[in-house]
Image 1 (cartoon, rainbow, N blue to C red):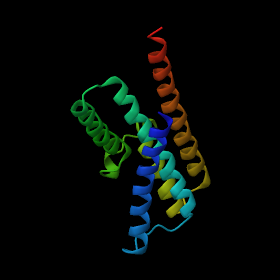
Image 2 (cartoon, rainbow, N blue to C red):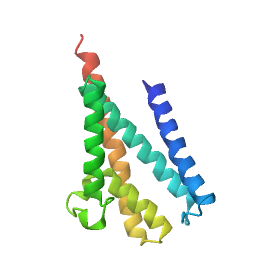
Image 3 (cartoon, one colour):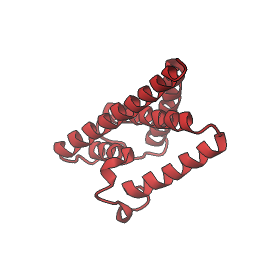
Image 4 (spheres, rainbow, N blue to C red):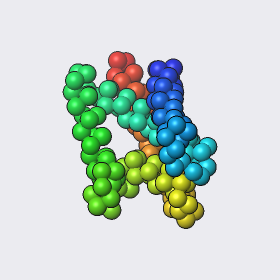
Length: 148
């Protein structure tokens, strides 16, 4: 399971990094700031998303149902975090969405947000990472002990 997880994270990270670097050097997109921090955020976010997908996969046996749930979460997370329009951001709820913290970290690096905002978002993203894999480990452990 660890190999599959690391492979999925690596594949997602490679895809996102390739898109970032391609858009920076081919289209001239504004990816100024600390590129290593941006890539680190993308890696952590990739790990969170893979973990969420694994949690959904443990509860839902149907591929179609899991895909629908992921699509709905993608839309809901995007709307709540303000990815669709800044006006759609829900200030109280956006702290509970990993997209919001990753977005703040990336834009904070590019547009030089205050250090407090970047540190707070970094802590939030790490908290999501620990929380998602803590839940996943608990689920896997429960499933293994259920057959005893």
